[in-house]
Length: 378
Image 1: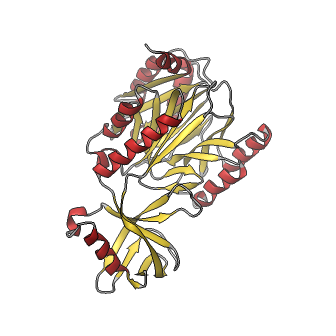
Image 2: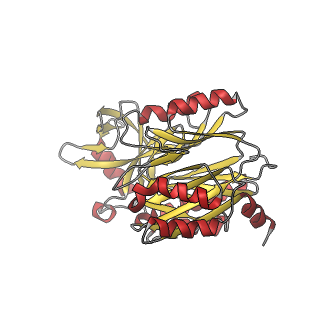
Image 3: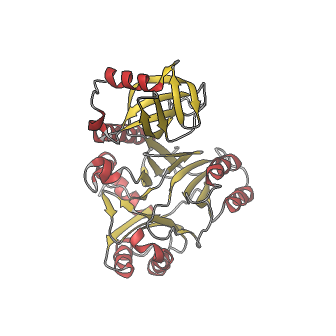
């Protein structure tokens, strides 16, 4: 075992299993985790087959491992190092130790802001791992407010479930946001969008809410067709569901953008309809999402993150429910790529209804956080 593996084993422990019942899966996970009573926190994610038992599973893991504080939620898919679980009862869990960081679990926005104030100011502000509930109308405003009022950087995703939308942060959370707040955290994060741009940005010159009427002073449909033609695409049916629009993030110096669905086309009216509201003067780009683009961008993000994260000891991965086997072709492929680049590093996470990075909500993305050794700068 190399030094990195030894360090990972001391500070982060990983367990994952499927089972016919929550007890069966939780017991298998606890056996893999072992005695972890020195660890301060555990992350636990369960598939929605076990959504009603998230609290039971966390309580069982606390008793079995000695790690008392647990944070987690539900996903239609969940993941761990090199593996994904979809459409079957399963549990993934990771226990952690953060010796150089202050941290607090929170079950609401106000609780997070209060905890940050009690910790006092810290260089770089707070780092927050958040789980969100897309059913809450206040969510869209609470994400940027949490980042602003904690001087913070957020990572996370929105619970996905066909059953209950359970969340846990030390105790059950019933708000738009819940999770973990840390100061002096040693982390590196990366975002993968999995898209190939088709041409450059166009200016919206006429629009009404999410109906784009004109781009660059021409009918929007004409610009769309011209863009596809320039990219060598002649048959839209071949790319059904793979074509999207990208809206640039205002103020970003990283070329960041938000991907939105291409909802409808009206060749007679010359208009297109997208999954977000735009106004004249906004910019818009067409893009394509497919397996090749997704794999290439995931590898780009991983290699960049590997270069920045010195001596990583564990991580969290939040991916979109539209990714996973639906995008990468088979269950486990997305996490296999991560393991291929980063090695056997303890990682857990889930596939959500939207992803969170910094102070905004995304779709179709993967957000990876790596925790680094305490004696290394991040």
